[in-house]
Structures are given as structure tokens and as C-alpha cells.
Image (tube, rainbow, N blue to C red; front, side):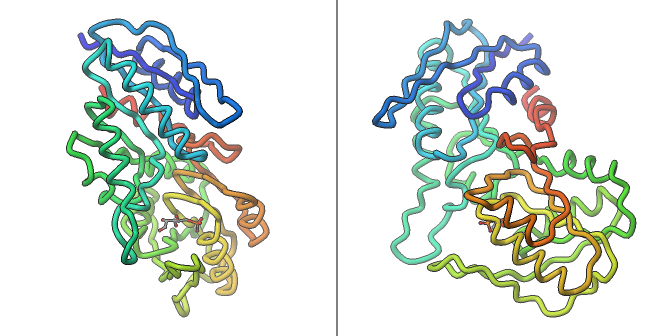
Length: 291
Ligand code: R5P
């Protein structure tokens, strides 16, 4: 029988503990000290031999620090075990998966090389921004979907006359899947983002949302700009309430306040990033993908 050891790192200790419990795995927690100059000092106990080691660490801000920490943990674990899987529920840099403007560095490809070089044998992520990011890896990768878990939450809410909304064309398939799990329909807004200034605009004209409860589904909420613009547009079209479901709630700065101010009734995210909105536990879908 395969034996697992889960190493819970700085950003994802609670999630790692939950995954370990589900897999009946040995659980090891790292201790991390950040020196005044920003360097991380990581310590963890002896890991059992002949186990598959799962290192769990989302790389949300501070992205570079948290990325370096998982690289260091994998390298150290590699001294004892050869089968090391990196579980990176939220993968930072996934939005830099291709060159959008001339001269841009495709940093996702560097991240992939570093994870491979550290000794990871396989990478697991949750709802990665785009599968293009995973094409940079030469080792196997798996993208786990949190959408069914998010949908279950909204099913329990029993919203009447619900309509699912994707804030942009890139998220259309996600919204379609979410809507089908809730036996309802969906629409896709046309969003544009200025690649230089970051300015977001909703380019859609009229949509038929009058009197309906809307669930806007997205993969990431970062500055909240996309959700704020989508909500303002939908409210102008006389919808009833707006709810938001997302996998990764980064909520940079006062994103959450801005979203609420725009009129969103509730924001639900998953525990790939631990926040007050993280009502959806992804440990079950992760454990099932690994077994
Ligand atoms: C973009 O295509 C993504 O799916 C998200 O909509 C985006 O990353 C959210 O960023 P922000 O909250 O800063 O608008």
C-alpha cells in the first residue's frame, strides 16, 4: 500500500492538515522564521523513507518568498525520498504564462523549471488561471477543479431564478460548468483590460438579467477590479442580487471592501488562500486526485 507524508508549509498549514487527515498520512509541519532582511529560515523534522511526499504550499503574496520556500522544502525532502509531489493550490505567476506585449518575460516558464530542478516529480494545482501555464512543465501536472465544490455551496442556498455570469470570455467554460451543476443558464460578459495601465472595461451592451439573482464566477479575485466593473454593469441592468464565487480570493489592498461597496451581497472563495471568505474546502478534491 502507498504511504503518504504531507508536509504543511507556511501558507497552507490548515489545508495540508486536512489533506493529511483524508489520506491517513503522516503530517509534518514546517517552522518558518523570516529574518529582518526577508530571507526565510525553514526547519522541519525527519521524513519517513519510502513514502510519497506531498509538499503543500500556495504561492500567494509574498509570492516570491513563498515560492522559494516550497523550492527549499522540496530540495530538502528530495534528500530522503525520490517521489515528491508539489501541491500548489494557488499557483502564483500562472497569469504570466505567455508573452502579451513584446519584451515581456514569461516568468511562468522559469517557475516551472525551478520546481522541476528542485526535485518535484508531479505538480498539482487547483483551477489554474489557464492550462497554458502547465504546458511549461516537462513533468506531469494535474489541474484539480474546485467548481463542483463551489456549486454545491450555491445549491444549498436555493436561489430562485438564478443566472450564472462569467465576467470575461476566458472564464466562459468555468461558468458553463458551474451553471450546468446548478441546472441553470449562464451568460458571458465581454471584458477588456488595458495591458499597460491595467484599466478594466465591460464592453457588453444590454444583457437580460432583470429581477434575477446572479452568481458571478471567476478563478481569481486580485484587485477586485473585474468583479467591481461587472457588478456595476449588472446592477445598471436591473438584476436582483449579485453573489460572487471564486476559487482564489487574493483580495489585494481593499478589494473586498470595494466589491461590497459595488453592491455584492456575498463573496465565497475556497481555502486555496485562507481568508474570511474561504467557505469552500478543497482538501477533499485534492485528496481524491492524489489517491
Ligand atoms: C482574469 O482573466 C482573471 O480570470 C481574473 O478575472 C482576474 O485575474 C481578476 O483580477 P482583478 O481582481 O485584479 O480584476
